Picture 1: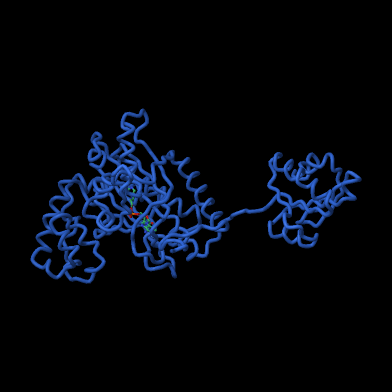
Picture 2: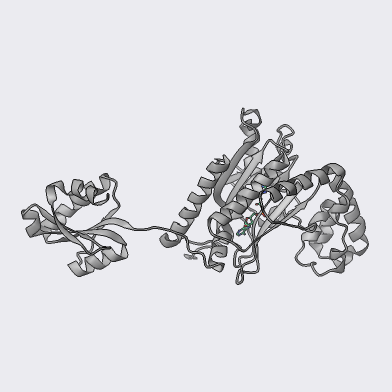
Length: 423
Ligand code: HAM
């Protein structure tokens, strides 16, 4: 029997949860500025959604999915990523018919991949992601990249590196694919079994293999740039021009290959350059996907998006020593001594909360000194002290914990007087 947390998952305890909430609020605020609206899709989908969407030859589909059969004998999978599910929903809800195009969506939620856990790699992790579906304007590619960069910047990260590539359109990709097969085929015996399988199915993924990284044929492999047709090249140039106009620095890297099958044209990743950041430096990945909406039975509608995990974002904040401005103060802590005062404090705390204040009191029968200590730990701005004598005389003492100033107030009009103290 195992009563411990499953490998690759984590508990987010209250102090950490405050950091998560802060990040979520900054990302929501940014999405409002960029006019991306939230979508919430189920945690599990029919397995085909990811098989078809993410691609049969990817590591995700071949090795990493949490797939199970439900009691109705259906094969379901805990979502390993958001894009396929969002596109499924886009088609199912006929969003291509909505008046506002492109449809700009964001999501924030847990994803599941059966990977080998290590720093920055979990089996359950939270992705914040966006998808803009319904436009093939290079300006939207630049918008999506800038949203990701600006989220990191808004949180105080500085050591960022944006790497960008074009995978070209279908014509360019087909030509490049052919060249890759010709390049690797004579020596494919030197490569791992995964790469041997990939050769005919998806040779681009060979470039992304971690096991065969050192093989000489990797660095001499034909570059996609030699195979980009004029249209794809012009598209990519326009994306870069828009990034320049927004002063977003980038590195073009023709070897950047994403681990999912649906990409074409723009592909990008954002890495952390921070010293002390673990071996996995990719914070965010995204790109354009033409054809995915059609794969799901929808019309020919192009899309682009990215996803980033909050776990890696928090690790980058830690590596750069950024502390977030998180305020966890309590407006007022009610210290009570004596049975009658304690009873009264229950009612008082309730009234204060109903008036919008964050309030706490002692529930462990502590002595006055210990109650003040608890008030300090709760970062209380004020402490109200109520004893049985004060109760009898309709009085209560209010202490401003910052200035140390103390006042005696009328108990019956306490809430009104306390409100005045806030001004
Ligand atoms: P991905 O590159 O598989 O792309 O994942 C995106 C990000 O999710 C990664 O850069 C990383 O921050 C985070 N991530 C992935 N796996 C893990 C893990 N095991 N533990 C912690 N974090 C992880 C996608 O998922 C695409 N759906 C992105 C996209 C959206 N493309 C277009 N639209």
